[in-house]
Length: 229
Image (cartoon, rainbow, N blue to C red):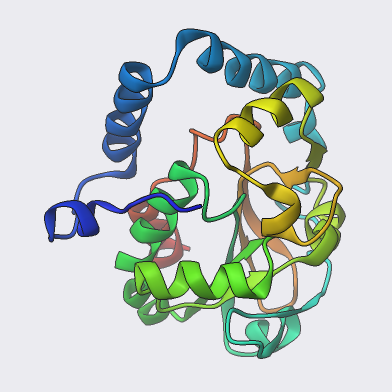
């Protein structure tokens, strides 16, 4: 249950904007995924937007809830510890089974050194188990912590959690996306993808949360924001 990266496919790293990588992946989905299946995923996104789920997520100016989670190596990591070293870029993703999450973490990995040079820390949070996070970090050679948010506790505190609708669960099962196995629970809950920049005192400086999992901030723009603020 994984999405092959371009590095695995052609043996070289992508250095294009994330929007271009996503456009390519959308084109492949349109080509190879049946229209009725695509329609189900679009229906799910539309329903989340109708519920205005993204509008309920924490915004700039709010206080980021503190947390302590395990990273992909089983090490305990807290937001307080990360903040003690500088500002923090937090990315909430769905899991290693999601091609758009894979594209995002690979793109973030390529600018991780730039984030660090700006004086900030990078961490990625998902509901998948520590083992799944380890597989993802190892497969994609990630140089930042992947934190396992068991039961979406932290994502819930940020206002990001939703339950995958029954009609979409069936599609995932047919595609061998076994969320109960990947996440270690039967809730079928996921976070909407979100990116936060948190100040050293815990104040959220910038926030992006969107029910459309194909819409995520450009990594280069995150670095530019960090440098200019």
